[in-house]
Length: 243
Image 1 (cartoon, rainbow, N blue to C red):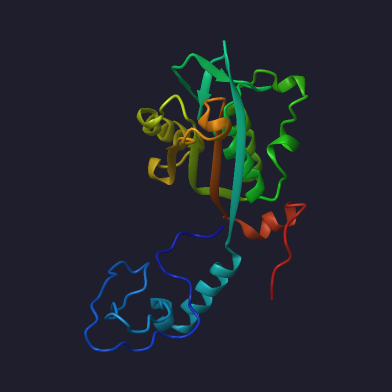
Image 2: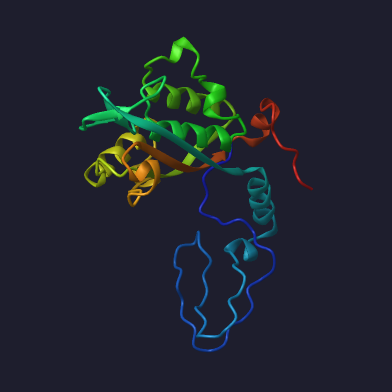
C-alpha cells in the first residue's frame, strides 16, 4: 500500500529563472516554491523538492507516483415531482408538499453520486447496478446504493478523494439545507466535510426544472486507487499501463 507523503511527484524539467521582481507564493513543501512573475513574464513549469532529493529518494517517489491512479467520474439524475411522496435529497428528508417519483426513494442526489462513482471506477452506471425493474430496490433507501457502491470500489482499492454536487431545483429553495446535506454525505462516505461540496441552482423558470416539474442533480467525483498493483489484477476492466 502506498504511504502518505508530503513529497511531490518529480516534474519534467527544472524551473527556469524568472526576471527580477518576483515574490514567493508557496511555503508548503507539498507545493512548488517559486516567485510570481511580473505582468508579462513567462510562467515557469512547476518543480518540486524531489528534483534536488538524493537519487534513491527520487527513484522511490517515481515508483510511488507511477503506482498511484486517480480517476474522475460524472453522474446525472432527474426525477419528476409528485404530490403524496416524501422529498429525499442527499439522504435527508426536505419539508415540501411534493416528492420525487422513482422506483426507489427517488433521491436524485445519491443517484447522481452513485452514478459518478461507478463511472469513475469503470463499473457501468446506476441502472446496471440497481435496475429499476428489480423488486429488491422498490422504495429502497438510496443510501444503501451508496454503501454498496463504496464497498465495490474499496474491493478494487479505490477511495473517494472529493465530491462536487450541483442540485437543480426551482423549488423548494435548498440554500438552508446544503450544509446539513454536505455533512450527512461526508459521514456516509467517511470523508471530512470539506471533501464534499453541495451547490443548488434554480432552472430560471425554464424547462421542466424551471417550471417546478422535476429536480435534477449532477455529480463529479475524484477517486484514487491506493493499492494499484493488486487492484489492477482484480478489476475486469482495468486499463493497460502506458509505457
